Length: 366
Image 1 (tube, helix red, strand yellow):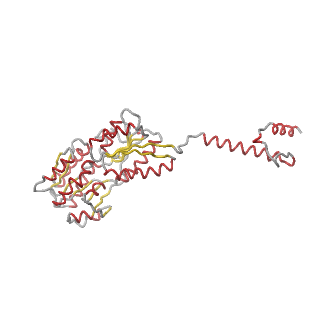
Image 2: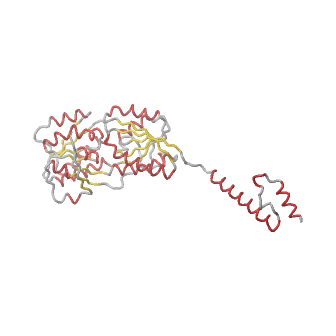
Image 3: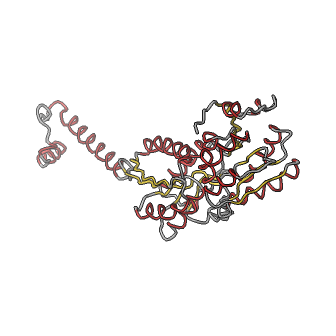
């Protein structure tokens, strides 16, 4: 009897939206038991909802990413990055908004473009390559905006960090190892052209990996019985001047260092004269191959971009660059363009073709 009075007292003081409607308002035949089970279910659902919504959610969170490119040669790297980021964004509930600035192979424009990007207050600054990383580092030094580089050589020598395992500045990313790979590129030159004696290389004194790569080359050629012909240049116009004024005896091979202005100048400034004299060009990435190099040895810039995207997600989640070690490519590849080999009338030794990780057929239009 006391239990029945207690239940009626609770029932009479319930708000309308919790008051059971017919037939649950009948108290006979165990209806009270069913009603209190309903209350327990509603309370349980309420508590579950409270727990779920008490945690922060990234749903529909917009993330602004500002990307700086030196030239169109960086597009492959940027494509790898943005494609991988699309997948990560879907998994994490991000909406990505990109602001992209391209210097169109005018290195002098990079500092101003970097400042413009920093002024937009993005969540993340992205440097497609090394000279872009240098510019963004300077432009963002008084801000807390993290910077990610997608594909950079000589990160320590150029002052982006003093320790790859523990970056000591507000920047991290992918180190290509292109500078030490110069030794391997020269080794391939000797295998491909056993009778070669002279290798031409352009050095841009104000770009660190260009200087460092030449240092490696100068040490390596001695062991391979080669001679290195180095031309210092400060602009793409000077590159063309060097090519136009080449005199006999001509170099046997042109070795390109990982420098954006040089890569961007291949098709217009280097290739025409190289085709005329039948001087093959060994490049340092797919962009150089598409612009006229017959082959390249390096890590895939596209895969570098995808690899960097994983680091970008950590940065967007709030992890500091100082807590994200700088990474290197997982693999390196020798890629040969058989179309250019035919155009240059090159006769590569039979043993060279099996060395290639990939053989492509890309027509280069001048």
